[in-house]
Length: 210
Image (cartoon, rainbow, N blue to C red):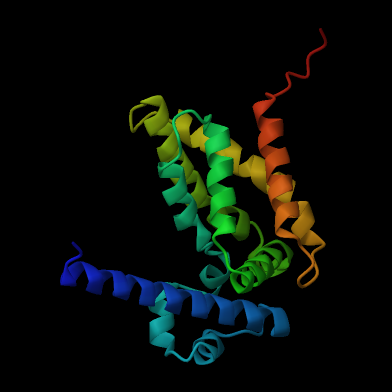
């Protein structure tokens, strides 16, 4: 039986997520229309009908509003529930697919605009690659550590996770760089992700002649 306290907590969390989504959607729309440099936090907050102070409860900067992938949390949930019979790479791919499947048509429109801005906004520089990869690597690394039964100070899970995330990014980014509004099919992105995972699973070439 659900308690009143539990229900209240669930409602608060859903409200917080809706506010965060609204802020990010406003940021993405304004940056798409006016450019990253000409978009201010005050404008984003006003477009989302909240105060700048509320904005900072969810994002530390306008860069963060763009770089934060709200699906990372969903991927982590699916990854934690991955069947034991799936390989690590297959489990990661399945978790990402499930997270994208959870997106409504409007959420997908916002997400593809966000991804395009991340790879085409010169002001972000290497920040996008570093910040954008931190949460996925951390979540995938924890999953790998648990799956392999390794100690918390073992560096291998983080290395394996970084390889997975980088493989997916390398396959997907070329699609995003040439993306026009509404032009990217969700299935095409997932197919590109699958290719990246498949290449990784084939093994790293030695570059040595037989």
